[in-house]
Length: 340
Image (tube, rainbow, N blue to C red; front, side, top):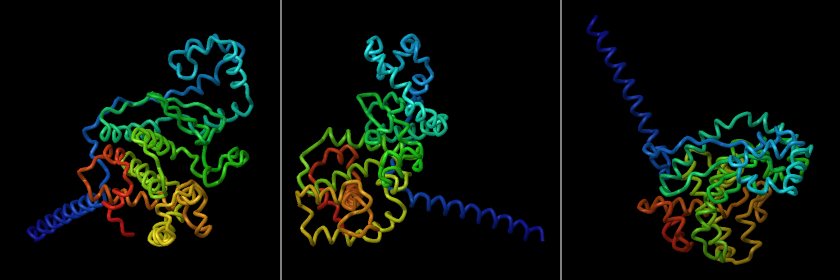
């Protein structure tokens, strides 16, 4: 009887060990091929400097006296202009504007702290340092922009500024009042900040290796390279966040990828230089107008993304830097052997 119990215990231990081993192997198999090992990459802890917290808590009637002590810390915003009477008047008008005060107060509810964002960005910049070892980690600031949703994030040299009033939640009342299209405002939420920052860096590295984009294929591959950059920097983020798709749009695109590709080929659009055609397939929109209103937008960008993914999967010796430097869209398409 005792021996039987021992056998049962051993069997249970072996079963548990095999269970965890099996699940560990499954996890390994599910790891995206573009996810780098960053276990050995360390960066200094990030701190986000809250410019709006200083600006909207000074006495506007002694604004100069209260801001001068912060000149060095927020030099990007204040600089030597803080000593100029005209600039002081502009700052006074800014901090006493009722709308901006309301935006600041509302932002405090959503952004009581930036701890989670700092952790997200630390992880992202570890991936960045893996792919670009000489890349600079910027000084990071937040501010109130007056909902400048066309420029939610700005990278100037080694300074990154985040307009946090563009990330107050997709249902924030002022977004609708300002007439911001729903397909844009639905992504104006805290979860989008890191992805938007990565987009800025993708654009920067593509600009460093820019070339003339002549046709739809050029633009599809350029958008695909940007999206693959997001793959590498935030590999655990959902594809929908990377390309601004809702769940239904993502499903539509996955189910109709071959149909969209066939449409582009059959209508001789791949090498079209028509700007309207290019924008229909790669520009942000609620849907792709040549298809139904239930279709996904940016269908050309999605296909360009899958082409780039296949290209990089088939060429594992290539680095992300190599991809950013490669400007021959036809070569990428040919080497990808893309067949949806």
